[in-house]
Image (cartoon, rainbow, N blue to C red; front, top):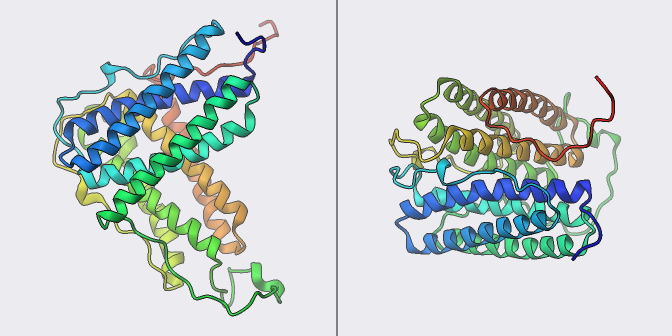
Length: 328
């Protein structure tokens, strides 16, 4: 038995872990049911096993602490008999993106937890997420679906920056992009392509007008983001990833509850804001930084509206909170 209570950080990551993995279980179970590719199905089964292990472990830790186990998502949030909504090839890329998000989440959790059992749990999560990343990447490569970032020429020797204008970008001649700027732009474009494809599919099957309008607005915001980021790469004569929109079927039957769809969108939107924040912190050209800052503002407004819509419909579960110590 642990004598040290869970800290706020440990409760935060464990709670989020449980809710997100319970959502992932619903999604992956449906994708397994509709998958026609045996290789992709094996990867999906591995990913499903990880999410089931995670939710079980978090439930055990919370039970030992007499902490309420989150509601999360259940079999009521998924229709396993719904027709195929996304092609197997897209689902493989989607799971690869989930593995990437898992690596980011678990590495942060590992740095912010201290209790021995929670620390050990996130070490295991980080390792298994890395394995999922490797399996999905290898399969994407084998199927010719993995799109590599642009290549740039090698320099003959290291150089120091020689001029102050290296940071400029609004007026006059713009310097070439750095490798880190290219990497972040390419990764962000690829991620938005996946999210936009999901929104197209979800908007097509939802029966609630408010949710459909919100998802359509997200799709339009995704189009704007892609235009903004792609233009930077194209101005530098560099390519980006291809759209995946044709991988959405014509089904009108929703495999997921509107509650799950909205939460799924909120998680991906939050991950996008986080990634743009990282990109903004590492950008060394001010015009690109301004684009990221503008996009972050617009995405935060969109996220707020989505949160309010979820609260209005009773779909937003309250995370662990501090005690209110003042009287009304």
